[in-house]
Image 1 (cartoon, rainbow, N blue to C red):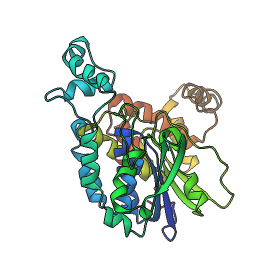
Image 2: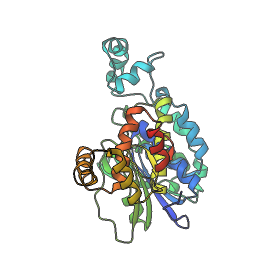
Image 3: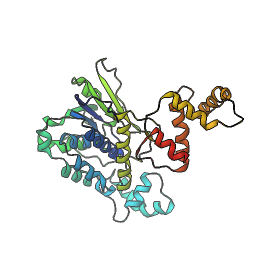
Image 4: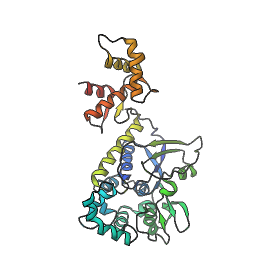
Length: 357
């Protein structure tokens, strides 16, 4: 596979907020690292700030380990034995028996005006090596909302006193469901209410080549028009990564895998919508394979090219596409129905041969 990004350049990374979906960003980071992509700045919001801190530390292994076995109890205080019920509640999957089981705990949360995030503070303090961040060759910026000042702010973490760094990382990730507490003498809430995908702070500070890692969900994107000499590469997903509070090891591992594969798609220009496919055939070969799909003794070639293929394109909502794209869309539909493994890279010929066989 041919790398599409220039490894002679040094990039800045923007990490979007999204709570438990943040494992996706670590999967992306793993793919960037394996491809030899260099970076010297990271801007993160919410969970992106926490992952950004580990990127500033250049501790990919630590980030993978942290997400690999993460549990809801690492983030919020939950009653013993009620973690699974709380996860189902946050995911909107709780039934009446679950609700009855956790009702006393839910009433405690309401009484105390939010979730107790003492575990999150311990998690951040354990993972964030403040000395490494302070002395890092990577500039780290985080976005948050200062409720005390009623404004959104972006802070360069490397310039903070070490005893204030973890508070600022928490400030960026302070979900509205969390019990309000002072951080560094002020009240903060999640940076997603100000700038969920902090590209602007990187552009403002002169970075020209930016990789933006996007997470699906609600969040405010700061609107601005990048200068013409700024190149932004987006890595995003159409997959459902779960809820913002769905902190579960199995979900995190799945999201890391999806992030890794989506990054490969962008890094190597892989084709496909749902699957990850390396293009090896040209348009004529793709057209011939499409014709083969419809050809029979009583079929006319003109009917196939002028009627059957446009009909297929309309059915797949792909009227404006190449023959290669149409061919893959047709076989991706078959692959989904047959349950073909997604999390691997296929060549287009290998992909089609597997399904035809």
